[in-house]
Amino acid sequence: MAAAPARAQSAAEGQKLAFDRGKGNCLTCHVIRGGDLPGTIGPELKDIKAKYPDRNELVAILFDETKRNPQTMMPPFGRNRLLTEQEINAIVDFLQTL
Image 1 (cartoon, rainbow, N blue to C red):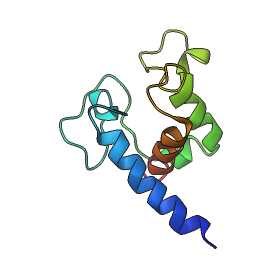
Image 2: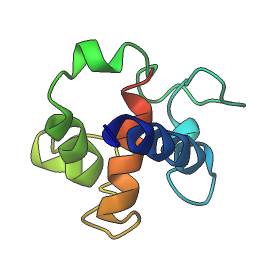
Image 3: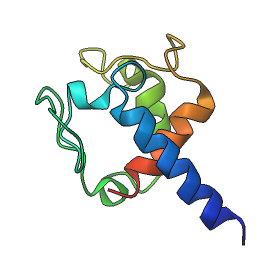
Image 4: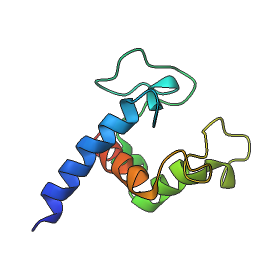
């Protein structure tokens, strides 16, 4: 039963990371509900759970989207060690709430 509160806490941490201009910095390229001064390079991040029902796909995108799409503008956050595995998972938990 502890999974739901843990996931909620992780999602809250993920939102902080996603909105942090020095860490996840997702708002540089994406519109995200609740975020200030979003960019428009990437798609708006909404309905994520419907678009990506397999959370592992989202983890892979954040880790290194160049494996799926060599032409992507998405930074390889995991490969370049910009975010830890735990931070990527927290951001995915947050994205799944959108």
